[in-house]
Length: 411
Image (tube, rainbow, N blue to C red):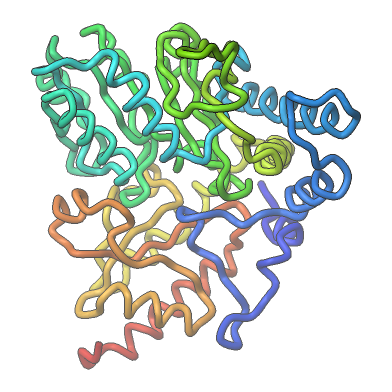
């Protein structure tokens, strides 16, 4: 079992007070904190190796290039991609999904075709497909969910047709705390010669991901949710599909030859990486992978599961609390979304902040899901492996205290 109290020592930001209370950070679904090992890797690059990559033959340029491409190999191994040609550095999940929607979607989607998403998707996995459907006069179709909030594979099999070109779905939900059956969904769309795109923002930091075992055609995730820097991320794509896909951004680095009237593109993965990249971000993300692998993704997933088994029943036992997503802790990730009767989620989050506890409130960039749940917004506590059981106890105790404060309906 992970020793969260020991691991927490690696995260300097967690040792501060907020409103005169020790900080308890439970907003990990929005962004994770960074261990000193990642901060030191970024600082080392800027202090010793800061140079542009791929273009220079001097020592600093060669060291920077080596460190950046070594990070790409770490990420290839981390998600079990077949080759570093399949690992594209991006600014995050949003960038990756947009690249696929424009660079690949525009090639294969035609008028009358169908694009499938679900009601639980983050706006980053809704809006690009809305825009693609508009450009191509295609139909955007929402797949059905089970009562627990998972994609209903059996009913989806009745919805997906030969017109289906793309199915884009989150691996894990940032609201419902569920993990979808990606392999089964991949099989469904592949039966119709379509393609599956996976939003891995909420899964990659918390469980072992094997893109080949999932048979994902594309898989996007963000560095900042998995201990890495903001503005870093990865888009995985099967090599044959990336060869076919068109780049979305143009300029230096991604070209082979530039003639007066036309240009040719570089080979994978650099075909998609125009301009000077976030070099420090890539190196920092590689350091984050080192840190996660040293602990072990199976151990991280097991620890978070223990935390959910501990916290969720205590939360469900509080009168007036509604928890969204599976009631069974065994089916629930460390993302726990809830409301307290009579208290607006923003007021609830503000009250938690007065207790030194950081939670999120709002629609969580999932307005279609809020409408599906028939709420305007919710509160969300999201746990990571550096959160302790003592912090979980304080979260529950503070919720009882906040409920008592608001019991007369004062908002």
